[in-house]
Image (cartoon, rainbow, N blue to C red; front, top):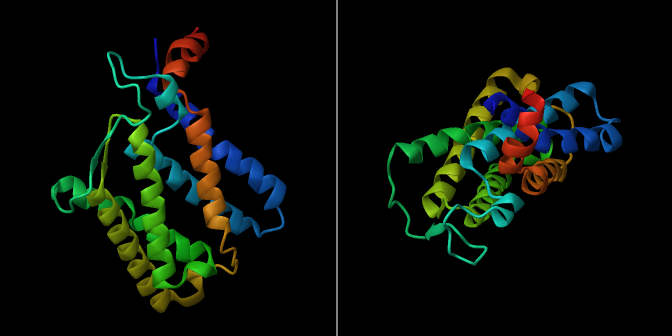
Length: 208
């Protein structure tokens, strides 16, 4: 019998374990507290991949049952903004508020509004493009909402930084470090996460 907790742990390891290995090898000279916040950031990224259903290699190797589309592109695309102005739009805003807060808090390079917001847009675009491999929709509204959420998160961080000063700032610059961890965690999910294989081949062995 398949246990969803097992799949969650498997999914988590696909994203987090490669980042943890990278941190141990190349990030061990950084302050311990910074490393803790980096792993919190990676956990957040994994949650976003999991919630949004980011595409991966498994979507190419395991086609939906009954699919007759030979193309890698399985999803639909909406490039007309504000076509789906529903609760989901506001939930997408809320989902990226932590991104806008964590980036400037953990890395000095993101304490500029433009840099953080563009990073939020890039992060969202990465996920939206990957969803072309799935049967989900790649939607411009999601990109807009995620970018707005990042902007809101930055505004929250900025307000708290004014109130609490250095307690809302770390001392590590690392302008590329955030994107290194985004890339590693995303590639971990893209290349290592095979939910169907895990459910039918590995999970039964664990259960028994």
